[in-house]
Length: 432
Ligand code: EPZ
Image 1 (cartoon, protein in one colour):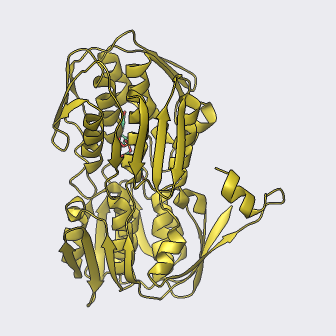
Image 2 (spheres, helix red, strand yellow):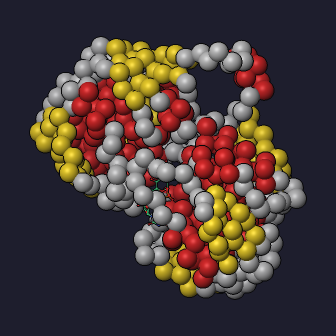
Image 3 (cartoon, helix red, strand yellow):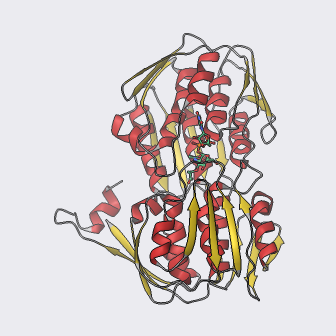
């Protein structure tokens, strides 16, 4: 287990390059199983979830090798049973269902484990895979699905679920006939997987709009591909810059993917400069409170909600944040209150009183984005804060302490050594 120790009160300054998007890379990885041969996917973040997904793919018959953010995949003879401990450790493992049903005709995967941010059913995935022709049985914690053949059909999602849209796209690319997905998710990651599948020979169109059409083909090849920049990692660092009163430039971002956040930041009094593939933010005057409601893309991203709440503590006035995507995504505010934050949570709504100076404390992350928010709070607080639960942060942020140090933060990682731990050098070369 490791912890982050942060000496707060320093403005972030400088420039960093943003990595490829976690929430795209994980899906491109499973999408490769629809094809054959060797894939090279670049700009893949070296994060725990990617390593876990490499473990899932290896168990299914894909050789993986991640070196310096370049992932090589060699699709071999596939099998459809996902090891339970891997499936439970990461909800995204459910995304293997579409590709394996399409390619193999069967898949067995454990129901994802509990989630700190809310109830996360799978009805939109399972009900619509059945519409495509799959037979699905849920026994205890395991899902078994099979299909001699998948047939294109017309699907309307009751909610624009990102994962369900991706799973159904991947199931449909090898189905007989055309599939239409209405009320589809419109996130940039959906466009990314459409481009990747089409590079393999699929016929998908409409991603980024509410209606996606997929014309089934008989087989797919391989592709080399670069993952789009991670808009959530970018937004996290922009919010950290604003919360510390700093000036930060991000390279390798798509400003359009962040417009909902940029609009809010500008309304609060943050200066934003957009260029081709970069963004610079700086704060010159006092920040003003803002009201925000999270929503599916292009709305304000739920994955930046915790990080935004921290900024709201530094803005004069009361900010109201409504979390419309998840039913339990304010759990981390109890940790912020240990640092002096004045936040009142009522169901899916939080009222944040600012400007409230934050003070150092020992706090613990319960999930990925909550962890990022606590790091931002530590950067803005006076004194030395310890953030526990860093393993959650490492799931989605590559070397967060090194990247923040590049921006002038005083932050270090302390490994709490276990008795049986191998020397780090051995783990570095042999461990996953
Ligand atoms: C993806 O999760 C992301 N994860 C999440 O990011 C992100 O918060 C979410 O999309 C929304 O943008 C990955 O891409 C790996 P959904 P996903 O299906 O696909 C309900 C992060 O921090 N729902 O769009 O699981 C669900 O309960 C993570 O990087 C159903 O009701 O999100 C939720 O309330 C956290 N039935 C809402 O839809 C279903 O079958 C949005 O879920 C599926 C979802």
